[in-house]
Picture 1 (cartoon, helix red, strand yellow):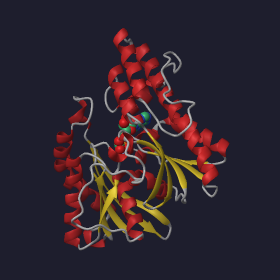
Picture 2 (spheres, protein in one colour; picture 1 turned 180 degrees about the vertical axis):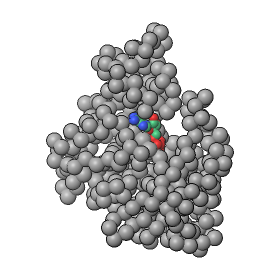
Picture 3 (cartoon, protein in one colour; picture 1 turned 45 degrees about the vertical axis):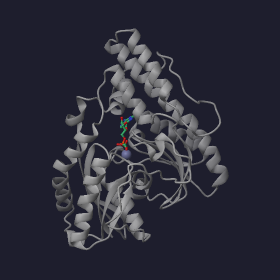
Length: 352
Ligand code: KG4
Ligand code: ZN
């Protein structure tokens, strides 16, 4: 099976062609056009600018993804696009092009949940079996879920306020490190002392698997308001922020591992996905807690943790294999939690 995937839910215009072969899954092409220049002056993503940029870039990226893969439209088995959660303008641009291509080629269209794309990527990269526990951490989402099968997710916990990536981005902005904040903080943190600034670890030590990061942002704001930071201070504060966010993520994930090992004794794997899962410190610490619990730790390579087209193509392919195709009349869903039975929370696919 060969599927074209289109991703336009935030500020990356991306397209990829992914195949499942007798020898396992393969990425035939995976192209991405980031919109750093467009948004950097604003310190965050501006929805209207993002939608217009997707419109400018998308056709070129899709054409290039097909040609790099050496695949023509009639050779595809389906066309998939992220249909939510995310910024509505971008979602409309991506799904409209995907529907047009699917209609022209008379192939099935797949409306993919962007979060399912992140959640299933390890089955593309490492062929991980269900069930697995996943820490899904990105700019808009921060949750712990059990992945029991394609389309079958149960949420153990989520953030009550900001997502982990949002905490990185807001802290980076306050420290003056630019956007996107996660990679900038990770770079600066390498030269810094993670114990110089005592920052809060919200909910640490409490039962349950929920997260909270707004107190951390307030603490960083106080520090940056009180003093003029020199480069040395900036590195120390970046290292302290990275350490605090990782500590909080690890504490909550450890609780989830305890529950997962009791309730799903057949489960063998802890997975991390989403942009924040490309953070080296977090990956090291997750690997360590997995090992002590007797679980394997798997995270996609960093380029497949941040938003990309291959994750959408792959989730589309998995859904196609299950017969879960969508109508050309289906709408985009700016809010779209993976676990519809869990109470709505901001960091779980319901924040538009
Ligand atoms: O998954 P993603 O590309 O987009 C969303 O679906 O939100 O995640 C982007 C987020 C941003 O908040 C970015 O700052 C964060 O992931 N991020 C990182 C790193 N790389 C990206 N956070 C910490 N360390 C990193 N190396
Ligand atoms: Zn994402």
